[in-house]
Image 1 (cartoon, helix red, strand yellow):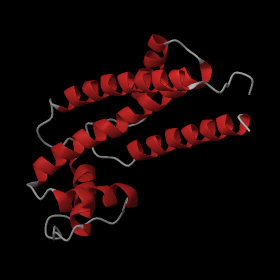
Image 2 (spheres, rainbow, N blue to C red; image 1 turned 180 degrees about the vertical axis):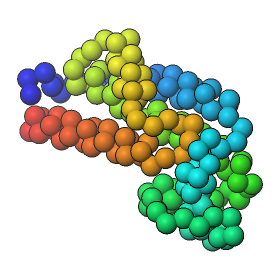
Image 3 (cartoon, rainbow, N blue to C red; image 1 turned 30 degrees about the horizontal axis):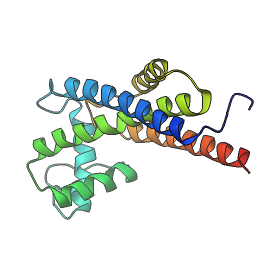
Length: 171
């Protein structure tokens, strides 16, 4: 991997700032899209995600919904939020849309950070790359879906790979 290099501390801070700018731009875009929606778009899917989070947090929604499939990771996150914030289901759904906007924005941070830190691409191009990488992923933040978490997991794996390569080169 000839294009990968080990940057100094100043370029690391610059890469973090570039990633943060990409994250904020994508988050604002996703959040503005979510302001349009007042009720659930994909009612069975969104309600299923909330149902399992509510069940794991101790709330009984069995009279409202009975589902067969189960997404473990999102349900655990939703359960934690249900324990912390006990509100109406629509408010919780809107709160989770904000969370999904943040989760969908993290790949923008990671891709801009990697392009700036490891490939020495200028800041504006790195932000653009981050935005494109984040918005081109499958799934939207306008509904609850586990595909958003799977996309984030892929980008986190890529970040780990580049971090390991970078630390192996410094030895």
